[in-house]
Length: 282
Image 1 (spheres, rainbow, N blue to C red):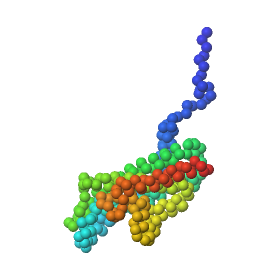
Image 2: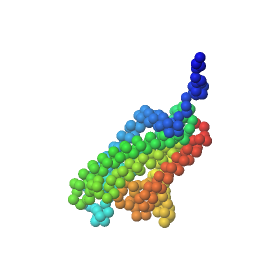
Image 3: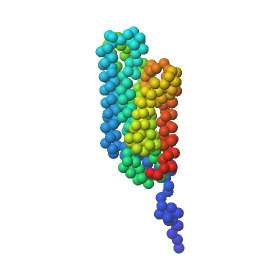
Image 4: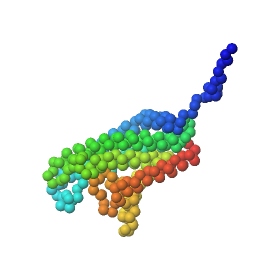
């Protein structure tokens, strides 16, 4: 007489096999993707980012064309048409940075972070998923915006016989367009890092604005050469050459060294945020 085969240990206990770390990460990424697009501020912030980059780039180029006859030979010789058409990034970075802060600080404000960590106890996994999703979204949006700003800006600059204009095949032009998207993507990660550290939206946004805009002004008041020696290591000065084909300032760091310093700010903020995330209560 045949006896029934014994049930497996997991079936006997009524449990399911624990998914792998990669499987957990994919699941958390899907959840973070859904949460990101379920908030109205995400779409509006990204649309504002595109509008600022394209609109201000076109406005700056039109203003430069209008002033072309009054520019001295030195300004005309060192004019960077690619970087000039991407100058809207300087303002658009605030929209991206603020949205990065909100990606995590809004969950603390509403108390949803407890449910998030209840579903996924591995808090660093949640943070990694938030960063991955947001950086990809910002990179794609930034690439679309920078590409549009480049072509619209160059078409405007071509209307002046005195100003140079660039094509996407010129040395450094494509790198600058992609670099603009990279800059915004890393800046978004910096926003998430500051939001994780401070947990309060107002405080994290104030820290972001201070780091990007206020600190460089304060450093300029230092005596020389301290001001130039310190300013080139600040986030904005270090990272902005990646979306220009000509050095913004002669004292700036080289292109990729500067961008590495800029990335270091984001990495440090995320590492500190991850440590605090595991040690503090939700």
